[in-house]
Length: 283
Image (tube, rainbow, N blue to C red; front, side, top):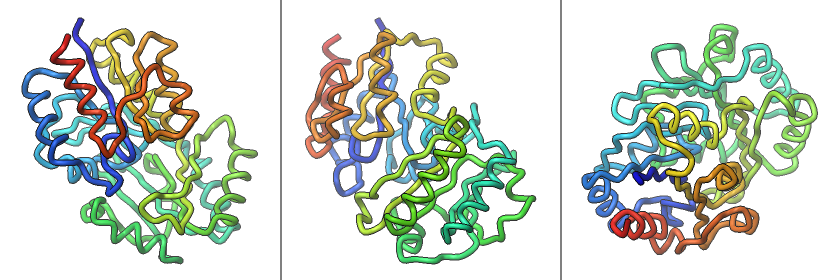
């Protein structure tokens, strides 16, 4: 039976340095060239994914910004969009102001992707813009968050700040919009002194993006294997209840390991690519 493999990036396919190893890059090229169906599901945007995967040509669409987009890897065309309703986007902005948080806002205007911000208020935000693994060059714009912007397809708010401030904002968002939004509150491993909060529509989840990918390409859950390491991969891991195989890397957090069907080697040992190679060539 033909199989499809979908993997998270940070902490899973990428090493602790946030990079793809030479071994994994070479093997991914070989696997895809030999016909393996491999896709990605990441919190990153497509420009960042392409930079990290440089030299690897994915045939399948990829899931970006935690399921906000299902996008053609080569053209960048968004095949599916899960955006935040405009009225809720306005309320999120007001709450950010009340908590003295200045967000980055990822948006799509129907033709192009954008990343808007009004001002930089802390070193964590400055680090995000300077992060060389990201690619903000084409989409970054410093603008006041007006109706013109908030009436676009708003797919994600990113708030970076100190723990107590960001945690209070997340708690209030969950109390007010628990059924409309999905949010992830976490410490960025590459900038650990700052807490991050990403805010998405309730349908913008990696698991939903995978469902859309399977539907689009005609695969079943029984053909699917997924890989993850952290809290925002939990719904992916639980796809084993639908017939998929879910694989946690050895370095995954405990709840991801508990939900997974199997454990593979760590991200530092190229566990994902080694698993795919053994499964693909051995089948």
